[in-house]
Length: 178
Image (cartoon, rainbow, N blue to C red; front, side, top):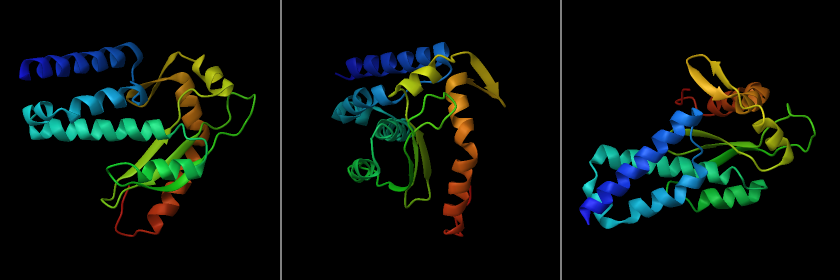
């Protein structure tokens, strides 16, 4: 019923808000099946305002992309991107290099859509190296935002490479801006 859907939506929203408050961020990968299940209910979609429908679709898309960051190789990542409802094309995949050093690169990818959107996704914990990064859990400010210090360390380790890949990609599309 509409009441049950409304309550489910409220519970989902509260759970995401609690996760954000507790950690400063929310991991989207485990949320994807729940969001898709909610959105697939005919009554749920029709009961949401258009702006909420767009937000839910964007959140599902982000959850799907974050899940694909766990693919082990470029071919399986491309296959996963091909299966998405919103067509997204890969333009760079950076696998994690095996290392005992915590400061080596995390696994990540860059993708784009024909609508001019650019996506970046970093894989979460999937290796001993990632677990070592996770142990650096002190909240760290960078600009106006607060991050898990291990995640921020990993992102900062590849920041220049990410920007170089983005710059090279955008140069091939003069009408695009970052």
